[in-house]
Length: 300
Image (cartoon, rainbow, N blue to C red; front, side):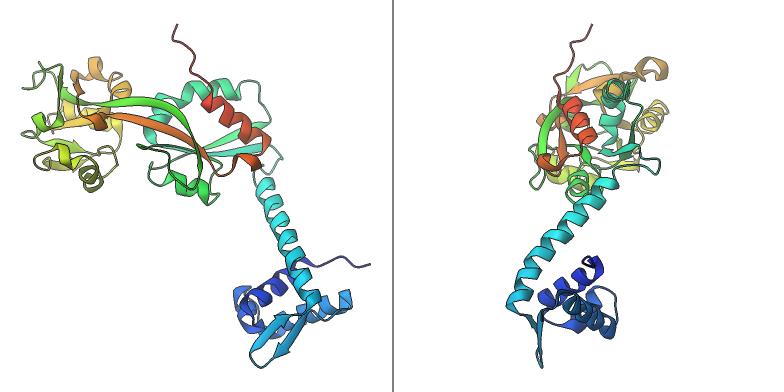
């Protein structure tokens, strides 16, 4: 017996949902005659009338209604199979797509990824850099398998797990008027030019988030996203800047900079790891999720 044809099932499902062969054809990028032919061939193959055709369009027969439900399950299974296969590279090696914000990539991932990939010659990881506000959407849409973002609370629509916490601080050059301070609120630094790229990635988003703690917007003449470049600009006297403390410490001595602790509540950040659905993770993705959410090893 000839097996069911997937393209025919797709156009049949579309016809039932659109209640029209012409609209189904448009949805599946076919001409109407080709869509009609595929449904007719499906009816001949099964020996049953599947669609009532009338002036207003089409509707399923009882047999067609049953096939519609089964066809939906079949097509969903095919889609999940294709997604699972896409998790492997052309040579059959397991491939994990991981999206993360820059702070996490620099501060936390090297050690975790080094331990995870050790001894796993059959796994590769595509590490993509993204903004925290965008990464949960990428996971929800299955553009990536795992995402890491920072937020005050877990984002709805994905399964999120606590990852790490960090703080951002204020970096100034040695000799700056603020350099003798050990801590301050950002409000105390508003008389000085700031190099942009704040938590929440843009000045407008940052002000919407932390504006109630500031009496006026900071004076931003230059936006610099790269952390090292931002520190170099600070060294050259182009402004002072907000930088994650763990990253800033790498540049203090070599660039003649001072790190001041910010007392603002928003200066502390919570990072989350998220996946689309924990019940449908491929084994390598599940293993990486467990590695990322494992308790931190104590510092030696």
